[in-house]
Amino acid sequence: MKLPKTLSISGFDPSAGAGMLADIKTFQIHQVYGFGVITGLTFQNESQITDVRWSSKYELISQLDVLFKRHAINAVKIGVTKNAEMLHWIVDYLRSQKHYVTVVWDPVFESSSGFVFWKGIDRGLLDSVVDQLNLVTPNIEEYGKIWDKANGHDSCKAAVLVKTADEDDMTVLDRLFYEDKLYTLKTKKYKGHNKHGTGCILSAGITAGLAKGMGLVQAYHNAKNTLNQYMLSSKSLLGTHE
View 1: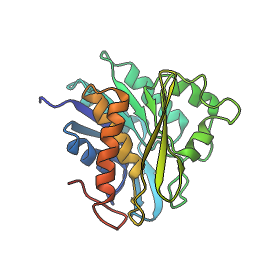
View 2 (view 1 turned 180 degrees about the vertical axis):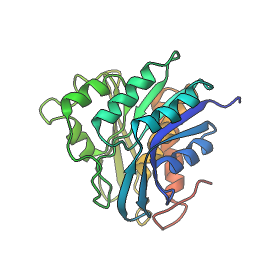
View 3 (view 1 turned 60 degrees about the horizontal axis):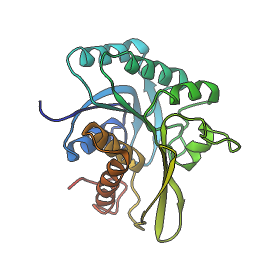
View 4 (view 1 turned 60 degrees about the vertical axis):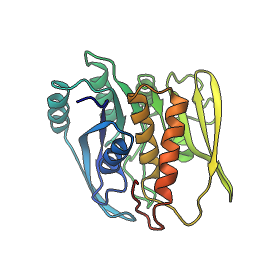
């Protein structure tokens, strides 16, 4: 296997618009090999979630151990988890590996359709988790749940990408805080091309770029270009990589 190896630790969305299936497809278009570990099985289509069945810690250990015993994985993207405690455990597991793994967390507290995954958020616990990560990719609402308005992420050791930090009729602004710098990243807004799972796809694309050894800013731009092509692939909530 000559391709860099990536791992998605995330939910299984049967519509394949978000979660692990979306991550794996994104990994492939970015020319990295994607493994997958299921945190939970969602019962959903692209516009509605009715329920979720979470994997137990034993099931997660069983999935992770068999992969890490055979493969040196370059980068990991973590998506939806049952709660902060499970996220903490997953990150501790990854940091216990003999080789260094780049870890990206794409927070998922609630679906865009209103299904709540996390019933409560322990900011103290999240602070200790986030400091072990390389990158966190919240949208503006998720950012506000992780950090309070007074201090923001000032003490955070990880890079932070705030997705859709601002927007108007013509543009979307993402803000990347990395190595004591703020990058304001502006792209065109595609009206009438809304998609299910865009946050997953962007974060997975960045993870793939980091697995290939790209710098974070370059990995972002590559991932954003791929996402924009995906957005334009159809006018439905589901799209394709071409």
